[in-house]
Image (cartoon, rainbow, N blue to C red; front, side, top):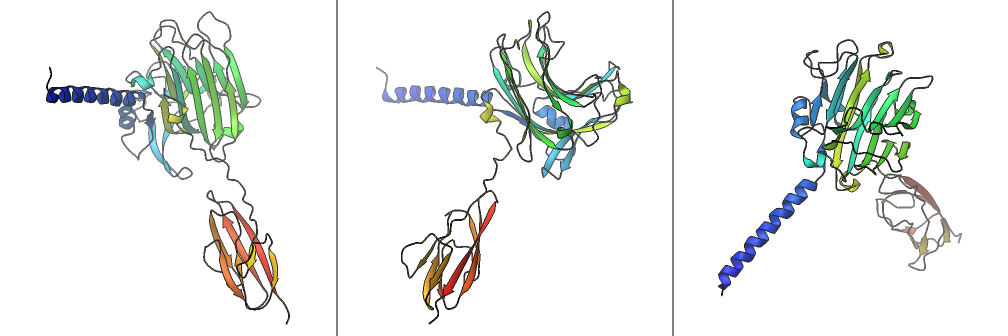
Length: 373
């Protein structure tokens, strides 16, 4: 028979092996995030998070992605620069130009989505004032297959010039299959010079699914929302699907274009669930309503904002809600306590201002009248 010590050692070894497996599993399933952290070493930061670079630096010898501080977000963000006359497509094709990052080829398993997996993307972007797309294509996001039938993207978010400039969501079916084309579109104007939070979900399989939600960051207004039916989101011969972000545009109508700087911030990629990449949009702040309550001489609370009492009476103000912050003035009230007790010597007006947890306020006046002898 094994000794007690041997049994304990065996149990400890099993426990440590299980713990290591759980830690490895948690690490593999953790969301991958990328946020700017200050000027300099931008490419190095991007690649440290296992994102790849598609840039035209070797022909136009400047770095095309910078980090700048954004006063609206109060944080550092990524600035993607593209130059109409100087840039090409990865130092090759000259009929198009591209400055993008992607979740491959060095990405972690969480960034490379194999058949049957669901991927969740969330990020922020801002198109500059005066942004000029062309009638051809100006893509700012793509999901593409790696290997096999990987020429055309599966999903594209693209700006297009026309009688009214539009933002389009495009699905491209596998080669030889129907169903390709613009799935949703909306005027581009609401996206200009404003921060937008984007959420994309893709189920990667033959009977797959796509979802795109674009919201204005400042107030959470939905600018575009589209959820597909069943779509083929898996390509023959593919190793995995992956996301791309930046500026990828045709030069076939170059006269429409100009040098552009598009801002991006706070990428999050998860295969565990959307909750791993939470929205930065705060829920609407409810408008508070103050309910007035008064009581005299420690008696019963009265739901009223006016009371007539004898001189020298102790009166307590006890408005609701019972949370939040309070400010008082008049009738001898002061400070921030919700309940205020005072001794009334003459008629007076007290003012209470309530502010809830998200900053919305409401006020209430209380009129106290002293009886004539």
